[in-house]
Length: 636
Image (cartoon, rainbow, N blue to C red; front, side):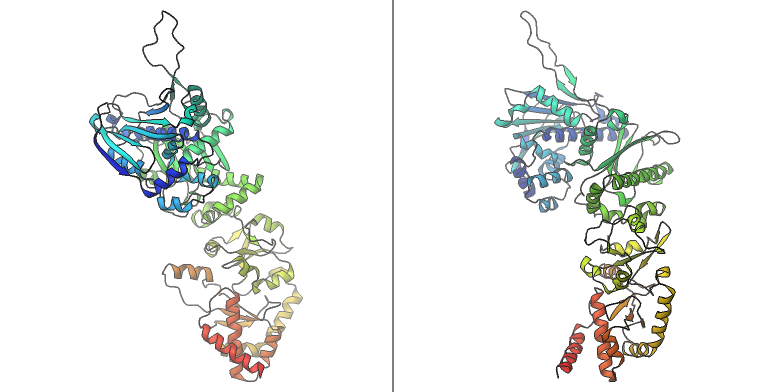
């Protein structure tokens, strides 16, 4: 290899400097992970070369089998990883090794907490595994050349991890990347064949590429010559994990494979390994992560499964195999039925893909159902991380709407907690005899809906109500119309009908009260004519004087706020004013002879009902003026 030319010294991106500081000060609790990260990168480089060589066979150059080699030198205190994958150009090196490439560096640093254990999981999420080399090395040298470039365009990257790096052009006859780690004095244990072999077997046995370690030769006997050539032995199984029988795979192997493909440092919550034979033939290995990635709510962010066709890597993030609401699922799908020249456009149109997508979606939902039934505490953790994303499901996947609904969790009046733990199946098991509806109430916060006047009659009758406070909930309920044959009813919408839960005596009494208050209804209509669509006697209230109900076809408060925040025009609508005829304030109002005073009192009750519903006042100053006027009159 020729001497370095066109040498250039560059500074690391600011965030990389901070990251290196964390790395060097043992962000990882387990230092040997550096080898797993570098081997995973080498494996990815081989996958990319396989894919690109489908269209450009000349990239394979000498045609040598793809492999990763690990060597060490005890005296020089170095460990070297060498792969013959895709390699990097000078521009690639500066982009990928000088910055945290395409990974949202500001987001990365913003998410750091200062707690080493909590922070370590972020490393993989932001694609910065390469920098783990500095945990054990005080200098790292990278020699690389991209496949297809001439030998004279090799690149040498070098850094001590202190704030800058050097890049130079070199001659490199063979494609691929060689990384030389100059170990710190107290990390010399890694320059040892037995140690490296154990680390590779522990973390990288699942890699489908041969990982070769130089055979250590016994000292030549007196009069014998040492072997002239290096001899190599394959340390890992070098077979695709997902193609092996499930009975042969240990849980630890599944977990390590997830960490490899998911760039995660925590074990997954669950996984499903399946082989399909018959009309369609494919293998799938799907994982549910333990925590959400930083870009979970960026719907346009890359996501999807790793796609292989007949064990040939095709695509890193194939989006077409799972719906968007399952974008947090990690895994691999390997098909025998897709052509090797498959592209994104073909993926979107191929009917085979639709069939596989349906089957894989059902498998994920079955896996989540099993987790919810068998590991309820684990499922609580899943719901905290991914619940709001799963709520997108009923709108996107009509075919599986019932199955998704069974996985949803809510807060309810049955639990004295804001934690979302109530499933629809459990709700129906507790339902009152004769109850044929599932009742719910949406709002901005748990405190607001828990204390809502709309719940008064339900508390009196002991009927459980779901309390929905996520911003997505009202939108969700516009698609989730029923579950297990029971329709959903918004307790703040329309004219409340409790069906069989109201006795004939109750209904008769309600009719009689409504008839006796017809005069008050008309007076209130006149006083509130500009602010309400209707006035009626309420059957929902036991303690409060009045509430506002939403018309059956009108948008609720949550949806109005979402649309207004996005700049969309919201259609005008007026609420329904309901009053409690048995409340002392209403009785006083009914007997008020002064029409001006009656109007002021009616508006005060309307504004109070709006505040109780979580809405803002249209004219706060007018409310204060009317209230102050009333207080002055009372004090006289």
